[in-house]
Image (cartoon, rainbow, N blue to C red):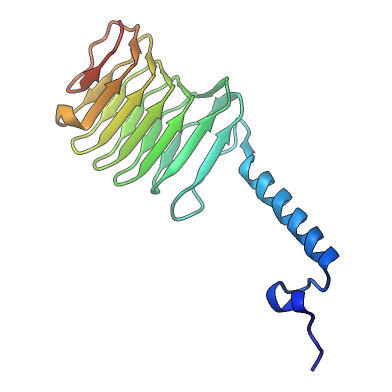
Length: 177
């Protein structure tokens, strides 16, 4: 049986302090690269993990998506927009930041959406039982929240509605028109 070094007992393949330092640097670089992975326009959004999928969308047109998992996060780099419908399916949860929506957003029964610093050009349709918060968002053109459920299921906080279209069944806190 080969003799193991102190380092190999804890980290396979690491036999010296120098190897340990190189492995640590490699791990840090890998972790940073995974954190800043950017999704290009036209690349489908696929939730590959059971929960906590994260996407950073590059500027440009992104096709719609159907979100089905728990705790999906989408962050738009300035200029990123959805040019097709985004749907958050039943029981899914999504946190979406800094995105522009050129088409409708659909929330299924028991879906939860938290939208921060987003711009909407069309309707946000919420089925009965879905939940949503809109924080610091702007509603343009034909945009409004159409909630088929109770008013306490949709909160609009510190947003601006330039569309002139009224929201349906929402609780509004400090929205300018």
